[in-house]
Image 1 (cartoon, rainbow, N blue to C red):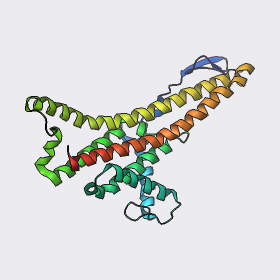
Image 2 (image 1 turned 90 degrees about the horizontal axis):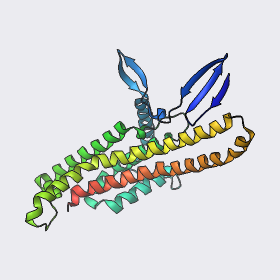
Image 3 (image 1 turned 180 degrees about the vertical axis):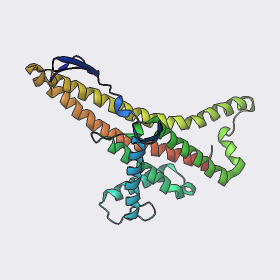
Image 4 (image 1 turned 90 degrees about the vertical axis):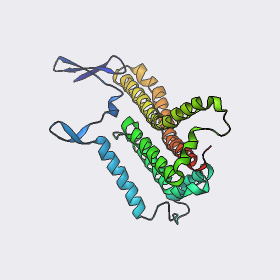
Amino acid sequence: MRLKSYSNYFFMFTINKEVVFFIVDPLEQFDSLPVLSYDNLTIVNNITIYCVLIFAGLFLQLLSGVHPVIKPTNAGSFANLIFNFVKSIVIENVNKSAQKHFPLIFYTFTFLLFCNMVGMVPYTFTITSSFTVTLYLSLGFFIGVNIIGWYNHRSDMLSLFLPGGAPIQITPFLIIIELISYFARIFSLSIRLFANMMSGHTLLKILVGFSYNMYASGSSILKVALVFPVLIVFLVTGLELSIAFLQAYVFTVLMCIYLNDVFSFH
């Protein structure tokens, strides 16, 4: 078998003097693949498997005593660092009356951090690169926060859509704008996380494919020059690790801000 490469995504195999062509798509890593199906209906896919595994890891964490109600006793442990980090986020962005919802914030951050970091392991799947997953996360949080707000404040929740002291002449326009921006939170949360994770992993796939093409070309010059794209891949991988943490942080901060809104209003 002989391999020739013509572009980042196009390869030609020669097998027994027969030429076989195929294209490598950098977006194929985000495909939802069926694991268990019945009568053309997918019951379990790869997203489900990874969600179950990550939830199992969080459950084991709970059983080990690392949870947001009882602070971890080991001061130098990673769990203690995460606990204190999320606690500082909540204290800075949420008023005291809403800080009782700290467990929700803590487990959401931990879940997103696990999902993003697991996706950095080769041959795994990044479930936060699926818009369906991020949309359900943001939609579930949005519905839950509004239920909490309505339960505590009833009709006073409507004051969210009318800033105090606004002139009566522009009140209808302000209400429309506030309604649009309020419901846009669902998509801003989900799209920001999904787009950042997908774009970063796509870039990595392209760079790795380009590096492999240089190696497979058989050219001595290209093999020597291979050190540069490999270095870039190494740097981008480090950048992706930081983005994996940063996106979990941004999602959590926005959750805190939106939760605080239904307690403090305008």
